[in-house]
Amino acid sequence: MIELVSAERCTGCNICVSVCPTNVFDAVEDSPPVIARQGDCQTCFMCELYCPVDALYVAHDANLAVAVDELALEDTKVLGSYRKAIGWTADSRPRRASDRSYLLLKPH
Image 1: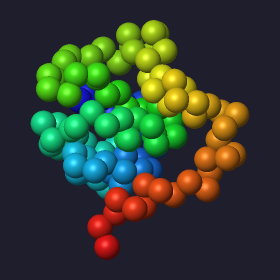
Image 2: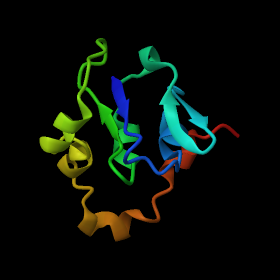
Image 3: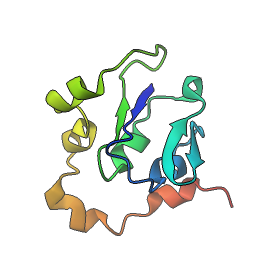
């Protein structure tokens, strides 16, 4: 379940808002998006995957909200670890730059 939007890291790009299939986030002008409907999170990791600055943390349990410590997540290199685990690294970024599949989820 989505647990964290890091205000320190977030650039306000709102990609997470666009890619979330269950509309968990609300965009906020001039601020990071907010987790508005946490209980609707299906733990699909799309937001964490597409976040270009590793500002999100999705816990592995889809049914249980947990308290998180952002500093501990940074220290243990958990932020951005899902993307790395599936091969989306800095080296693969040029190949991914043209991927706009998340737009398929946008309402028409």
